[in-house]
Length: 327
Ligand code: NAD
Image 1 (cartoon, rainbow, N blue to C red):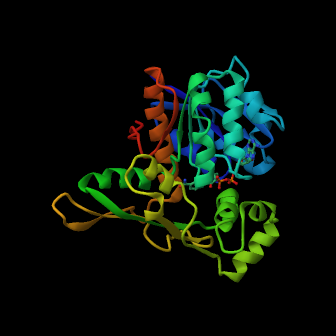
Image 2 (image 1 turned 135 degrees about the vertical axis):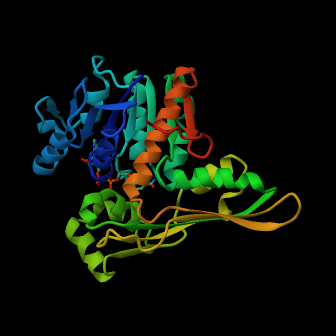
Image 3 (image 1 turned 30 degrees about the vertical axis):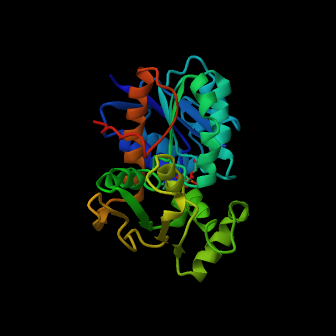
C-alpha cells in the first residue's frame, strides 16, 4: 500500500525530501506547505513544477492547485478532504518552541496519523516529550529526532551500546558541506545559535546580510563544539548513558559541497568481560546532509506508520525505534 505523505517546510530539506520521494514506490507526496501557502494534490505533486514555482515565486501556494495562506499548516491539516497519512516536519525550529507549537496544532485539529521531525536541540525534544500523553490521546504517532544527528547517528549509538555493559562516552562529529548557505537558511541560523556568544533568538533575528558578514569573517566555516543536541537525552531516556557522556560537535562549510570532515559516531564502553573498546560508525563522504536526513526521516515515517496501524500512539524517538527501509 502506498503511504500518502506531506512535507511541511519547503526549503533546503523539504525540497530534497520531495526529490527523494519521487524515486520511491511506497510513498507518494500529496501535500506541501511553506510559510506563505500550501498545495494538496491527491494524485501526487510534480517535483519539478513545485521546486521551480517555489524558487521563482517563494511559495508552493502559487502552483495551479495551490492556496496562499499565512496559516498554511492549519489550513492544510484541518481540511477533512485532505487524505494524508503522515507528515515530515522539515520546518525551522525558530523560535525554539516552534515545533512543539506545530505538534499542538495537529493535536487540536483532530487529524490522526504519523509525524516525524528532524529536530536538534535537547530543550526542543523535551517540549515534545511533554506532549506525549496529548499525542497519544489524539491518535497521533510522533517520532522525534529523526534526521542525521539526532537520528541516524543516535540510532547507531543505541545499536553500538549493545556490546557493552557500561557506556563511557558517545562522541558525535559531523561534517557538512553545502555550496551556498542560502539553500539551508534555517539549518545555518540554528547552527550559528550554537556558536559562543549567540542564542536561538539572536540567530533568528539576524538578517541575511548579517549572516553573510559573519560567514565572511569565518571564511564560510562554522565550527561547533559541545552543542546542545538531543542525542544526549534520547540515549539517557533509554538508560544507555547519562547525558553528560554524550558530546556533539562538527564543522559546516557553507561554501563548498565537499564535507570538511567525515561524519562519525564513536561509542566507547566496557564489555561484561572488562574490556574497554570503541565502536565507530562513519558515514560515506559522498552522502549529503540531505540524503542522510531525509532518507532517515522517511525510514522512521514508515516505522511510525506501522505503529499507527497497530494503534500504537504517542511520542517515540529515533533511538528506540528501528527505521524501516522505504522502497
Ligand atoms: P529552510 O530555511 O531552507 O526552509 C524552511 C522552510 O520552512 C521554508 O520553506 C519556509 O517557508 C518554511 N516555513 C517557515 N515557517 C513556516 C510556517 N510557519 N509554516 C509553514 N512553513 C514555514 O530550512 P532547512 O535548512 O531545510 O532546515 C529545516 C530544519 O531541519 C531546521 O530546523 C534544521 O535544523 C533541521 N535539520 C536537522 C538536521 C538533523 O540532522 N537533525 C540536519 C539538517 C537540518
